[in-house]
Amino acid sequence: MHDDTSRPLKLVVIGGGGGVSQVLLGAQATFAERTGVIAVTDTGRSTGTARALAAMPAPGDLRNTLVALARDPDAPLARLLQHRFSATTLPALDGMAFGNLLIAALTQMTGDFGTAIATVSELLDCTAHILPVSTVNAQLGAEREDGSVASDELAVRALHMAPLRRLTLSPPDAPAHPAVLAALATADVVTLGPGSFFTSVMAALLFSGLVTALRQTPATVVFIVNTTTQPGQTDSFTSFEHVRRLVEFLGPDTLDVALLSRSDRLLPDVVAQYAADGLHLLHPGDDELAAIAALGVTPLVRDLTEVTASKRTLWNKQDTIRHDPVRLGLALRELALGRE
Image 1 (cartoon, one colour):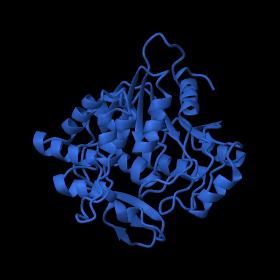
Image 2 (tube, rainbow, N blue to C red; image 1 turned 120 degrees about the horizontal axis):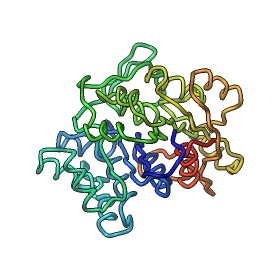
Image 3 (cartoon, rainbow, N blue to C red; image 1 turned 135 degrees about the vertical axis):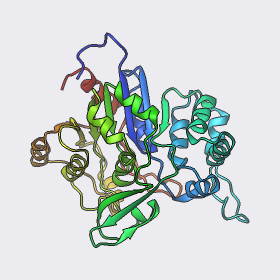
Image 4 (cartoon, rainbow, N blue to C red; image 1 turned 90 degrees about the vertical axis):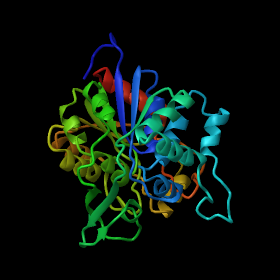
């Protein structure tokens, strides 16, 4: 950990689009150099159609993160990237985000997915570096506890199935983006999550070279634990179970801190609305914190949740109780400066 601000601090955030955006936005005041590393194995919604069109990694979470970190997220180009076509006579394009098509076109034109993402970042004048975790068109799979196999990301997160035992990647040796590994080598703080535990956070870690880079980074490695369970992925998980599974995957002495949220500010009606959809609030008790510490991971508890008056409704996607960017940023500042 670092105890001074004599040099610019560097942050690397690994996960899915929404969670990474929250962390990057909240950390802006403390970290001079911020890098978002985005999962690329999604196959659902318009992202899956765009992937099939250009034989490329998933663009959707990257598109959302690029827009969120644009110099002006309300500028015409940023809004255009988020525009979804209404095309009832062309079902393949109905609901398609224009930005996904733009990334597909740039990938075909340049022959490289990483170059396509860098071009969009430049067009939007992004305030952070946004990178795909890999530029390989890889597919996420899984083995379940009952022995059944899921062959793509949409099947991995399917509801009412047996719990996930192990994730797989095809091709299994697909490499992480070299720029991601370079960022990890010089980072001060690295965060994993928040985001879908298996299909964003763990999926990103499957790419070759990434776990080794996390084991070797001089950074403080922080797991930002989700605020709720997620149907189809972590239905019965406690906060401790999230941390245990991650430590099991990374190996000992890699994860330094588990950043957990406990809040009494949430409206009971809102918590009940999420619970009715299978998203149950995680409120880790002292026994869980002790169990996390016994794994060799320091638990850091703060009130990190974003309070809303009602449950959000997203386009063809389930939302969760989000982390508050400002509160996240303050917690990461504590860690960067070596204070608890």
